[in-house]
Length: 173
Image (cartoon, rainbow, N blue to C red; front, side, top):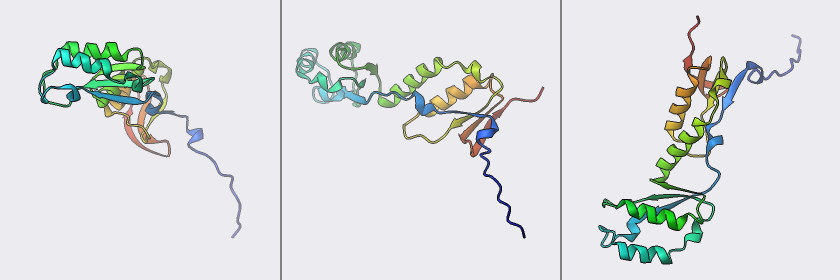
């Protein structure tokens, strides 16, 4: 038997697949949380005078350059002005201020980023949406990207180029 060495061929590189990585749209700034629960009187009520005094002595510099998610984890009615006061105090320090949980912030930021993507450039392309990420990409980002790509892409797959799950294939005309 003759041992003929064949050159290794990277079939993935030559496949014409375009890989999209949603983690590329993940915010670069660190996330900080501001829970209004810590400012409630008896864990139930937000008293304006006490709240204003607490905000005045709070260390806002700890949010320097960070995305700040402002929310209340307690089952309490929080007046809208409370979120507004936090925004005013945090504005000189925080990169971005969002009313909601960290998970809601990530959904929002991905929606915003995906609105800016020119999906027409993927017209007729075979697109792989990368599945593994070191960052918490919300499932809603995958749904939104698929929704936007579907009218343009020839096919959409999920995973890695060497091992994909077919999601959509444009019917032959």
